[in-house]
Image (cartoon, rainbow, N blue to C red):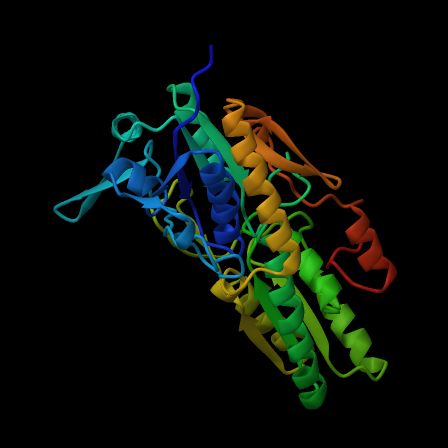
Length: 366
């Protein structure tokens, strides 16, 4: 006979994004209705390792549906299997996963709901192999998890990009400039692609389609010759020219992926200005894309994810992640969820639609 679920933990790992609080609410309210106590683990997996938790009551999740960020805090440097320890100014990477498991057992948790992106899902899978009962909820503005059609947070980030491009459009037109807008996404181009389409970008540069400088120059010069004396360029932080390298700001060995991307927007602007003579400016949206209230779409998706996650917990279907397929919420094995990164394909309908309305991806072969 299966024992009844009585106590669960919930954490938000990785970078923050709009919709996290909506998931916490979507898990906590149904859990309480079914007599389950909910413990919020603070600052992602850091709290699981360091033993930081608070009990969540209905009052704690009331009014947080439209609130950005996460009431539990988050961290992208708390991987228990890649834990940075600093001694005498030197950082050493150690494994503290056994301490995380010890705290999980010590708190008497029957299950853990882990909300996060590919890094969080990888950690969740490893912890499940150690015996922890885990259900995953996919979160990332990058939308780069293959197992789900969409991750919450992406729509909100795209909204920020499209609004920024709308605003840049007016000043670009007024001053007859090329405006380059650098957006997030790491190694996937979904934010730049969808945000660029929604915001009317003339050129979209993404990691999956290495660009040719001359093709970019020709596009802005062609527009200028036709009387359109401005251009909007939406560039993903992981975009790079053909035979070129990623532009990085720094490396942080405390993170599982130490590379900090950034700077491609300024580089693209400098190259366009130098090779076309057109006045060019850069805007880097950065963390604006991760902050603020979630869009209605993300509020709904987050609520669906949260309520379905607690259903999996109550059915004791562990080692799984909730996912969106079409209009339905399903679940997939964590192992399958992390097996492949979802990247933009050259024949993706969004790419084809963009090409049809005259968008350039900086590649002459498309």
